Image (cartoon, rainbow over all chains, first blue to last red; front, top):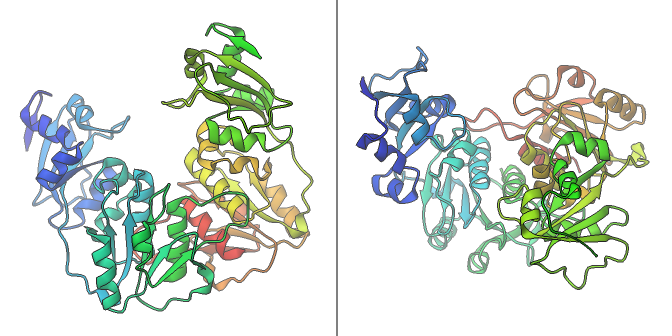
Length: 250
Length: 250
């Protein structure tokens, strides 16, 4: 096992750079923190490139790290590369998963159009995975999936299903060609969701916190849905709306 | 209109103290920030005790402030009493609403057992209000409803329905006596929620992020429910679970 003791070490600087989207995109990797997330990640072959651990903490003996590099560092270094206030003393560099072959005709998909808040995106990934969604398609203008706040909010679900960057307009065209019903979420020209009974495959599009799903996408869907508001609130949080609709559609 | 220019003014110190639960409990008031929340609050008679506004910003001309005190302060003072990073230059002192007379037999209620995260509590208040829930009963061990992060996450819904502190065990007994079905959320000895078709009144209990609803409460309910997990995640976020169940039950 390698040991690094200086925060000025070039490797430490490299890890810290992974806090930026630019560096994550360039290297196709991202950094995760904490025992729970690292444990979720090592359950998958070929996801974790490297574990970084403080000299003050111990790796659980049941972890199988046969093919994973481990670097021991000082507490100061772990704090330097950490984005949380209280680091657990463990982090890992993970590889961004490449696009899998999805069979569209049987899929349940969540399409995400320009969602800005990392907590909302992470919570939607967690909920969609729990609900048995097969993949998440992330459109332009959405917060980076590999942002550390997104990863934390997924509670590890980010490792359990494919998350694919794509052009949502192309996806909607392809899904409809394969006979998959595509549902938008909208307040106008939409049906109350309770009136739609879905069988099998579906794609659900959710949109930006302020502006909703783009008009162009809404014009392409099979059907747009809304969730009735019975109180005085103007709207629901996007992650809440996504959860109600996904569990209804499946 | 009064004007205050020194951050050392005792009134400023008093406002700042409202960042603590102790002071909020003692004075039965709380502080809100931002144009949206203040606008929601002034729509109700007898909620806003006082508006505090920076000399740099203007009160919208359509606001009716006939019976509300307004104090103009410096930008430095607004920043001093603000808990957000970028203050909009407006805040208000509001009165905590007292317990209303609820007719239990027709009510839809959300009971909250020891939820810790302010964002989760605020989002649940927002969702419940949107779903037409009549009141929220907050049990011991739950984060303070008048915490500024809770208030922000409610998006103003905190003003639209009664939020009552209470002993949940007493509430469950009273609700059952009035014939209101009480549903707990649990992973063991529970039914999939889709199997329960509710008519009219209900009370739903959601619990702590780590430990769920207390065993004692779960033993008193009419029926405990769970949301099936079809993926590999261990659980759903509590605000997500509450949303799925409330919209299903109503």
